[in-house]
Image 1: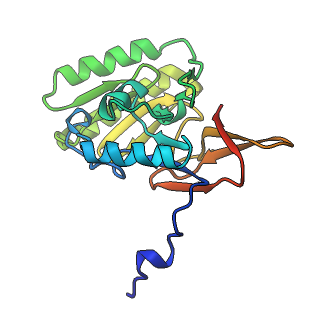
Image 2: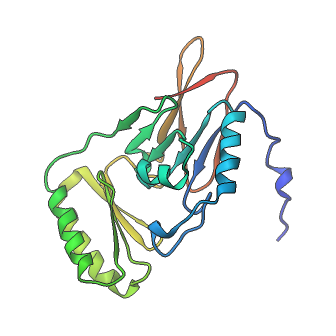
Image 3: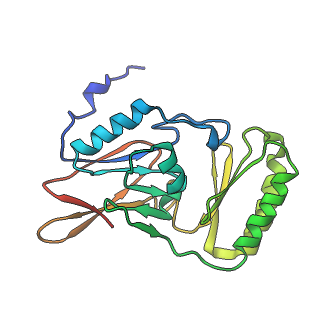
Length: 220
């Protein structure tokens, strides 16, 4: 198989780009547990430099909460979409939260945590608006975990869905997902003299670049 050199399909950098950067698995490597990843000072410096070069038109995209992203990339505060778009921070620092359906979700999270406490190395992330269960270190419990999650999903109805990832399951509200319909995470709104154009991130497993044609970026 013949591979083209990267320079043959990556355009020359331009200051009118808007950068949408996926975090885990792209900017940083996966770890056995999500709290075991690290971000180098060199990466933060590079991203901060890019942020200045593109006029703040840069955003981090992640399934992590924005608070976790701030801790990883400190001291720089980036615009970002956390929890797959359930929470977003715009270029002015304002946080926008997705409305949460009430009901059984709190009880479901409690059941999952109690299940994990009885099984070593099953790691639970309670993100507030969603909950993730990592079984990378205890794959023999996968079937038992799936049975529990099936019961949980029957309790919380149609407002939530179960998403599978790399050795992880996550329960989250419908409509906020990087891989299934609608396959978008709204982050930037670009203002022109005539109208507002909404730019969306698609397939956030990869670093995405979107060209801006003489537009001033603001986050919705």
